[in-house]
Length: 468
Image (tube, rainbow, N blue to C red; front, side, top):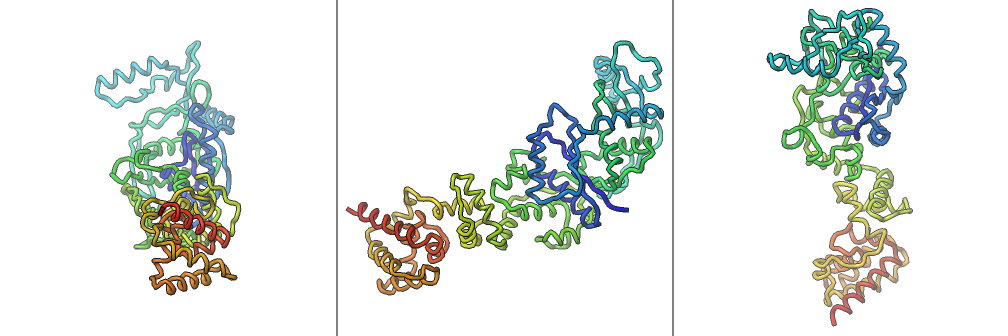
């Protein structure tokens, strides 16, 4: 048997973290078994589904590098197939037309609640043979009235449902459009899905879907229902917990490798290992190892992982992403080599690429003011001799490289009888506008001779003007 999994989001919003984890687990299970991963867009909710949401899902999957082998398939392109299968169920006596009006159903529900019964359709049209004039009926699935449906869940274990507790769900509305539980079965059957991995909010749908499979004479897939993801406070994850959209994490400066590594550990583990390569995830992942209990988001853990991946990344790989972040704050960059050099200088210092971009603006654009505290401490009149000395020494360099710059800084410090930091820090404020930057020799090398000398001149003039 070839393993075939599917990720089937509804395009009524962005791809959130819970959906991304489901997609990852589906992808990993398929890859672990050498199978196929299918992407299906469940867009039958025409009122709430949007093309923008579809694109957000596709963008999120691409950013996370969860490549699908087939698809994306769209349910709205398969309405004729659903109609055919609904007719098949009607012809086989597994479905029936229901002519109940909305008012009748509401009255039925009210009476059941009065009797303290579970609200449900009572099957009054189940054996009806005569149409009701002027009423366009819905189609209901004729659920078995006796027996049990067993879900041998790969995560939760054996879950048993009494069929008497399952009412006859609508599979086609009065306008002919199909409903979720029906389309899912038809799609999973047609697409030969062997394993359905999804959130445990779908668990109660599973016995209904298994019964539809049975009525169609088809083998249902194996099911694995993942526990939910909670916020740091233990409450259900929501927007108030921060960035929950996958693409928001990109905007906040997280790397897809960090997000994927973080998601795989939300409910799954392999010993005490925390950091996994893609190949290791594929090698070790087993759906039976997923925890039954819910997992809580831990922002500090994600930040730690992100810092790890930034530190260990190839600067040339990070350069385009840093360029994207700089563009978001209005600093367009056209020099990939310079971007890579900045990444190399900053990657040991930044926890996110957004933070790196903010700290790196001075490499790519002029600044109009110095940080007041840094200027007070380092651009005072007593700094002028050091700045003038180092400016003169730097101007004489034939080799504008970090080692040569470092030598000039050391020579200036020795000539002035100062520690290196007493020379380097005023230079840092002069060229970066703040008291924080990568090592001074690396910073000046990246800035280049012309820009470095020009900014030193500006600082010298600024001190002279403010010391009168």
